[in-house]
Image (tube, rainbow, N blue to C red; front, side, top):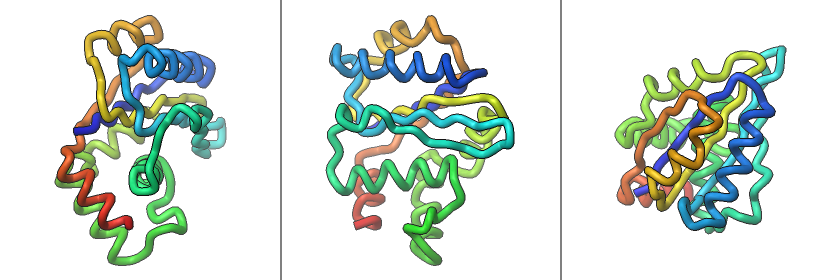
Length: 160
């Protein structure tokens, strides 16, 4: 089972510091990352996704595609040029069954107003109490949902 954790912050600098802490927690074996990104919204409302920790996230092609699709679904225009028509609808339907439904996406979108930022963590393994303690100094608004192994596998197969 993977955990999708989105932590919203009032400014990009705090989000970047939180990102750096997640990287440290990965090195300390408190979290095993399948994806990590910082999403920031500029003053014009345009969203920017930064994935500065690429070397720390060991991703297979399938998990990389899943991560890209999750980022696209949550923060960008559906499809992102990679998926079209019925396939996008099937993936959105599958995600809705896994806990990433329209309500969750709306709550994520509510975190990201102009000038704000968020850290997005997809963790394949997580020591929750140590992760929470490690991130507590940054505050933020936390949204979390789980992807079962079956949902993750089905999504990866549909993306393959």
